[in-house]
Amino acid sequence: KKLSESSKELLSLVLTSTKAAQKKDIVRNFAAAVKSIKSPANHEELLKLFTNFVETSGAKKLSVEGVKAICEYLCEEARGSNPKVKSATSGLAGAIHKQIGLPFMATITPLAEKAGPTAAALFKDAISKNPHDASSAPVSAAAEEGDEEEDGEMEAFELPRADLFQSLPKDILAKMGQTEGKNAWKARKEAMEEVKAQ
Image 1 (cartoon, rainbow, N blue to C red):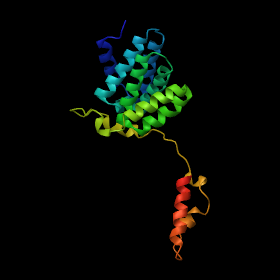
Image 2: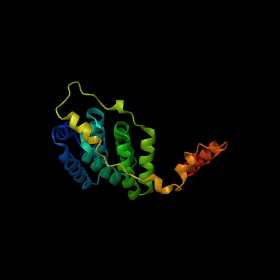
Image 3: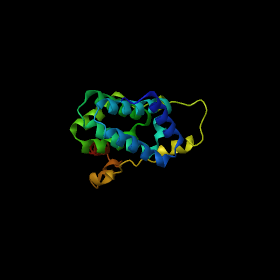
Image 4: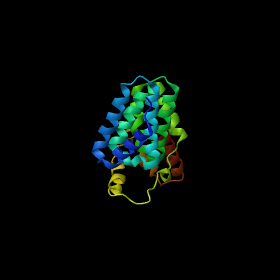
């Protein structure tokens, strides 16, 4: 059977009423329940339920761990071949990216690359079609208790860090800071072009 309208209400109720740490388990349990069902209609319906939740309650309500679990689930579904499931997968990825942007992209990209080139292309397309727009997140009429906590938690995504100075020549800062002589501007320009080429 297709998941019913009451499932939509149940998912929304469960995700909005649980603590952030438990949302990962909830997402994984829903995904595991659908994974055992062969019918693609059920997979599509669960993706649409999550999309509806994101669009009505906001991606931030999923918490950092919930979004990470959704990313894992999205990559599983992206491996399939059913076009409706792929479309629903792309729709959910786009809805989340539109609301939280870079943290979602930084989480989904390495998982998608592991899932294969088809999954990576699917998510790249979904992200490009749904650019980040913080104002797209739904605003509830009455602020709920714990909303501020969840907003701060979304900033807890661990984005990849890199020391960019290691990839630059050692004398690049000296060249960029050159001020003496008529041709100092040329040295600075060359240094900036070196950085740009890296």
